[in-house]
Structures are given as structure tokens and as C-alpha cells.
Length: 162
Image 1 (cartoon, rainbow, N blue to C red):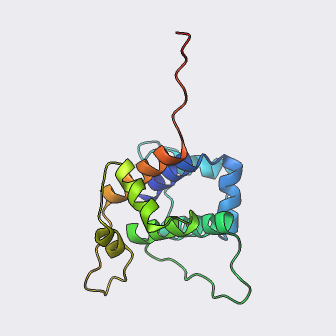
Image 2 (cartoon, helix red, strand yellow):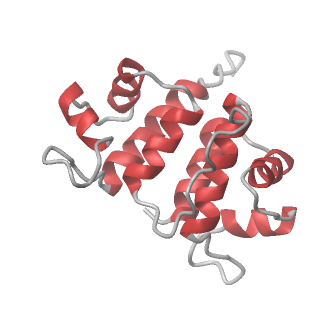
């Protein structure tokens, strides 16, 4: 998945406004404007779209962690600068930001249509050098974000007057 698509899905799942997106980017150390945020949200086919690089998307995810969990303790090391953001790193940062336990992650994946075992899930969070590491495919991240949307944005009641 490209960063713009992931950013759109996160924004929709968490129901974030333009102003809140700007704040989150700012917490991660990236200055953006409302027009730029809207251009990140556009599809790839749109002439006005701007690609969100791994470094910028990484700062958004770092800002999301700060927004949801608070600032890091004084004296703690600063997160490393991201040069290449993998789906595994994206999933890990979302897990941290949303304070999701393993059982909640498994339920979310199941709600998104991708049931997974505990072993399969933990393999996604291992270091790449580990023999049981498993790369997170686009489909797994997509299904996780779909499940997150289903959990966080309940369906609106159907108008019974019709």
C-alpha cells in the first residue's frame, strides 16, 4: 500500500479533521497546511495529488503516538529518522499509538476479514533478522485498517421512517 492510501484509511478510521491532521503532523515534527493535507488525501490519479514520502508519513505516525499517548518522558531517546517505512513498522506504530493489545489486534484483523493466529501476529513485530520474522503484506495492513474502521466507526442507524 502506498503511504497516501494508508494515510486516508487511518484518517477515516480515526475520524480526523484537517485541523487535527495538521496538529498530528506538527507533533511529529512536520509542518503542513490544510491544502497540503487535502492533497495527501487525493487519489493517485488526481493531478493535484502530492505523494506522502516515508519520512513524512513516519513523522505523522510518530505524531499520532504523541497525540494518543502523550509526549515521551524527558530524557528518552528520540525516534530514529525513517528512511524506508515498511508495512511492519506502520502496523507497529499504529499498535503503539492506539495502545492495542495482542487480543484486540487479532479481533481487529478478524473483523477486517483476515483472521490470524497469535504466532502469525507476533512474527510481524519481530526484527527482520529474526528467523521467525514475517513481512507484513499490503493485504494484511489493508484488512487491519478495514477492521479498525469497523471497530471505531460504528454503522449509523438506518432511518426507520422510510
